[in-house]
Image (cartoon, rainbow, N blue to C red; front, top):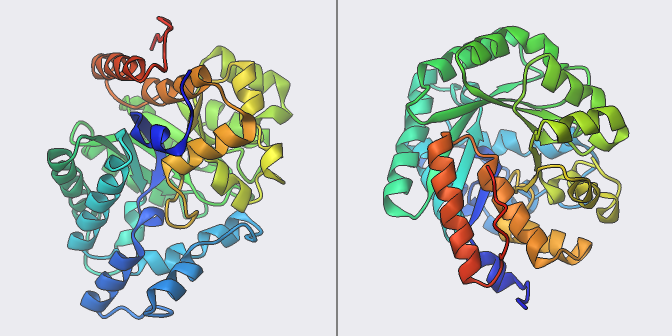
Length: 353
């Protein structure tokens, strides 16, 4: 019998599907870039800056959770900074054996200086290529649009995703505050995305009810749901998600911080797992939430008393739910199953994609 301790979980191959570039930077890098770019920060003391950017458990809402992003993005307005941030995020993930990583970001947020949208995307893709060369990791890039911005900006972001399809962009996302900003307002962007056969994921059911998830699925054709903590409030929709094997990108720590759930014990991940939902574990924002993927797995293991088989199922769900081409996904998943067996963690042949 294997002991599910932190050292083991860190060593196991993992996939991360919900990770924001700007919310996962290193504090030291933010300080360094600010000095290079002559950007004024609230403080130049690393410890104090970290305390400002890490929201903690006393955060009261999603809107409050999003506030530190203005500080982070102030140093992500140059190509070299975007490349560096992408590379370092991949390095941090590779150090805990994240074998497949999907990084998401909103290009529109990085055009406050002289960068054009295509410059922003190329800078991130450069960091991806460098990281894949240097580390044992595969990376997909997801372009985000923002709910509370003009839907015309979403259409522009969608056009960008279409232009960079098969050049490192693996999907399209809708992020930001849910309340009063329905997904259906961005239908035109998603019409373009879906008709160009691009993968979709939508933040939904995080700070708003299951109707937000319903819109994500039926109004803009989401292939995956970001968070989905409130899915359990609608049994019919819950069954639909389960029957169609629609993955949920769950981020336990950030769900607590944004008050998507009242307390850790109220988090629905155990219920979803028992019900058969294809659940994945993710960090959301490594810096803002002060977490790693290993931390998130350990939080789930210790809180919900997960078994070896359940941990392996979560790990494989991550790879099976990726936006990789099927043939690559199949080979990568088979390889991961072999590694899990070498750790004495998996004795089941049922790992269908």
